[in-house]
Structure formats: structure tokens, C-alpha cells
Length: 80
Image (cartoon, rainbow, N blue to C red; front, side, top):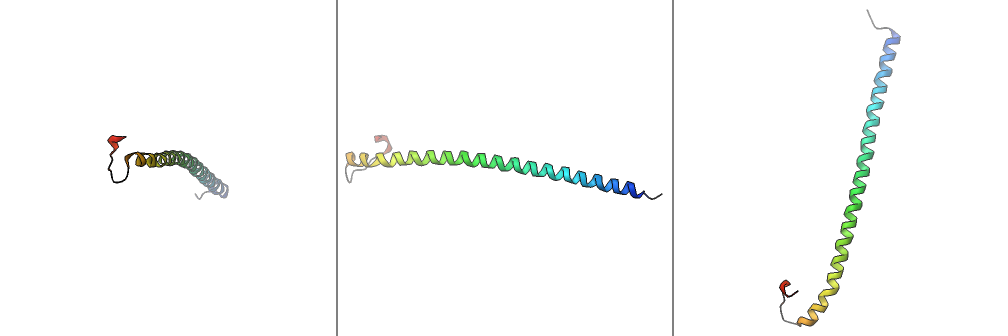
């Protein structure tokens, strides 16, 4: 016996509801992943800023070392 019109409409409505739930879960997971990515990016930028700050400090110290060592004299890290 063929399914009734009401049964077919109910089944179609259930399929749409399942599809909506699946889509909402996917969107929710995507939003969470974007948030995690943004947090990781902020951490990387913070680390980058620290590295640049330390490199700047080193750049300020090297001329003083060069001044004390003098021109034409090699130096190594062991002198630090």
C-alpha cells in the first residue's frame, strides 16, 4: 500500500529537520574552530613581538661590543 500524503509530508519534514540540525552542528564547529584559530594567531603575534623586542635589544648592545673590541678584531660568542 502506498504511503499516505500525510506520512510523506511528515517524513520530508523530519528529513529537513535532520538536515537543519546537521547544518547547525557544522556551523557551530566551524565557529569554534575559527575562534581557536584566532586565539592561536594572537599567541603567535605575542611571541613574534617578544622575539622582535629581544632582537631590538641585541641590536642596541652590539655597537657597544664592537666599540670595545675595535675594528678588525674578530670576536666570538665566548667573549660575551
